[in-house]
Length: 489
Length: 96
Image (tube, rainbow over all chains, first blue to last red; front, side):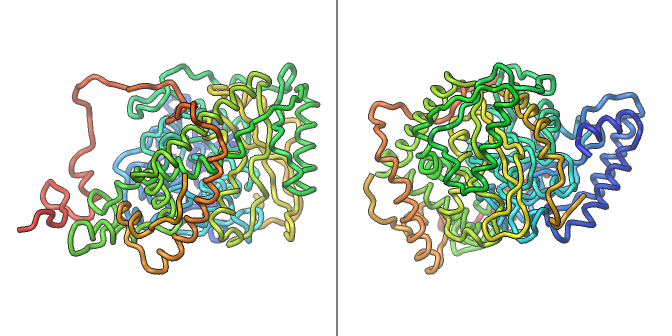
């Protein structure tokens, strides 16, 4: 069931939140041994919240997410629960407060089922960088679910939740959504409060939903979006309701195809699927126009200076004093060194080192400032493109979900986010919507691909509206994948 | 932009992370390669381009200087690896 269906049925008294929660927890029991979406199960808490929701419904309250089971990425705080960021340094840390985004969904009747696995501190594209658990792709257990919000994606794909909360810094919502046949939506930078989201790269981080349908993404976004005084970077501007903007055609819209993103490089099968997706947009009434993002090719280089620089600063707070792990040393400096050596995994260390280097005296202008200038050029590219079109369409990821250990060279993993990073740098809203199945090179089972749609800053209504039209016309999201994946629901 | 190779030991000291000999060798190689990739930015003419720190309109967000609710001290200290009374406990910083 979708989140919207559950909320309607629970609100109408056709089923109770307690019953939905019990059946979701049973599904978790049945598949979690294979999938491993969650790092922490919240069974007792979920049942308690469900009781509370049923009481509120009985008392006549209207709740937009009545009884909807959600998976919370483990870099978001939920008061009284373990919040690890997939890291040994926070393995036993209990959050003393709740993230605004999480609190808003719970206030609307959502039931937190568990804290979902992720790449350590959201740094990765496969979930393999988690220090605390392995998450598998429900459609082929030999493949990764994507990342960094891989646990949230796998949980929704395996019906262990109806909404997954994710965070996206360079593609961490959109890529796992593509890998798990879901809608994954990164709103405009600043739309959703990051209060209670443990920071990775603060000029890029944005929270968003992973769902089975565009309607569910709109439902979750409308509740989470909006100004929060607890996050100075949250936008203090009106939020248009996206649930009222869902369209059934694309008449009158110009959709830009990016000249530099030739899908031929993705191989024959993927190329054919993306071409078909673009034709479908045209059949729905859109006019396809060619646009250019000449600087997009520099997105990865720009991102892999800016994001590590910000991460090296943000993660300085993990020093063995105020929270998490401490490993003693001869003096306070040795304590810091030892704590961080034991607490952080290889990818986090790699990024802290590159960021520290890029910010260090003598290299600051050559690396960090130059990357910030390239970021300006990328933003200008988008502004120019959006003068010629209303939306941009392109792939969401460089390939379908890959097998474990397939990307052992760090740079080959970074390339996964080639198509998502430019949007993050420009701050524009973007989503991935399912666009069909393909058997990967050397693979056995068909795996999903995602179409990325992208709108100008603050264009969430248009973006979700158009994605809804595409989703209804193609039905890839609700269609069962061809033949034998590991988890069917 | 010109480097060279990264002096990983020095950077690790700045970053306050102890590295093993294996890590020093591995990260020197990997980060050297990554720097090779990011050096592509030298191809862009950015001489007259302003830097972007973040993309939205917010500037110098201020608030009234008034007391607001905050977390209870006990709750916060429960997350600390070591405490003493109402304080975080740290190793001795000033020599006796």
